[in-house]
Image (cartoon, rainbow, N blue to C red):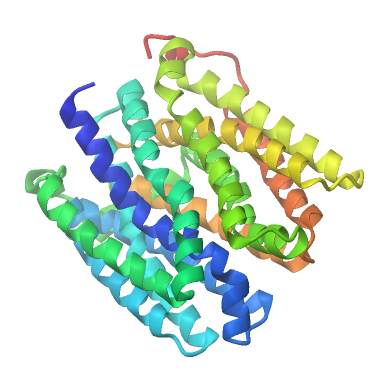
Length: 401
C-alpha cells in the first residue's frame, strides 16, 4: 500500500466526515436544544431529519455536476454552503430557524458524501477499490467515534450553539485540505459529453439496473438501521436509562468502533472469498443479531448492557456490508461514477430518512420501538440480499476478483 494511496484515503475520509461530524457532535445536544428552544421532541428530531433529507437529495444534483465540472469545484461549493448553514444554525433564535439552516447545512454537506465515492471509482475498481473504500471509512470513523464525545464536552462547557461554531471551523480547515492535498481526478477531457441530458440518461440506465438498485438498497437499509439509532438513541439512553451525555457518547462511539474496525477487513476478505460472498455472509449475520436483539427486548428484558452488546456485534457485521455493496454497485459504471454515486447516496439517505420518520411515529422514549425499527431494516436488507445475490457463487466471486 503506497504512501499516495494512504494519503488519498486520509483526504477523502476527512472530507467525507464533515457532514456526519455535524450530525454526531449534535446528538448529545438534542434534549438540551428542545428545552432551550421550547420545542417538542418531534420538532427537535425534525432538525435532524431535514439535514438527512437535504444531504441525501442534494447528492442527486451534485453527482452529475461533478461529472460535468470536476470533483474539486463541487467540493468547494459545498463547503461554502455548509459554513453558511453552520453559522446560521449557531445563531438560530427558534426551532424553525434552526430547521431552515440545517436544510442549507445538509445540502452543503452533500458533495462530501457523493464526490469521494466517485473519486475512488475514478482511480480504482475491484479489490483495490474495496481496500481504498475501507481505508476511507477508517478515516471517516473519526466522526462517529470522536464527535459525540467532543460534542458532549463542548455542550457541557459552552452550550449547544458552540457545536455549530466548531463544525464551522472544521469546514474551513477542510477547504485548506482540499486546496493543498487533492488533485482533480476527472480532468477536462473526461468531462466531454457530460451534461444534464446525459445525467438523466444515466439515471434512467441506473434505475433499470437491478443489480445496482439491489446492492444500493441492501446498503441503504443497513445504513437506515444506524439512522434510526441516531435519531432515537440520545432520548433512549439519556432520558430512559438515565445516562449522562458523556456516557451516551461513549456508548455511541463503541458502536462506531465496531463498525469501522470490521470494515478494515473488507479488502482481505474480498481477496479470499470474493465481494459477493462477503456481502451475503455479513448481511445474514447482521440480520440474525438484530432479530435476536428484538426477541430479547420484546420478552421484557430491557437491560442496557444487553442492548449495547448486541448493537455492538450487529453494527460490526454492518461494517462489512456498506463498503462492499458500494464497490459492487458502482463496478460497471465508471463513465458515470458521479451520477452513480449520487443516486446511491440519495437512495441511502431517502431510505434512512423514511426509516427515521416511521420510527419517530411510534417512538415513546423506550427502547423497544427503536429496536423494532432497527430489526425491520435488517430483515429488509436480508430479503434484498437473497433476491440480488441469492444465486450461487459466480465466477466473478473467485479470489482473483
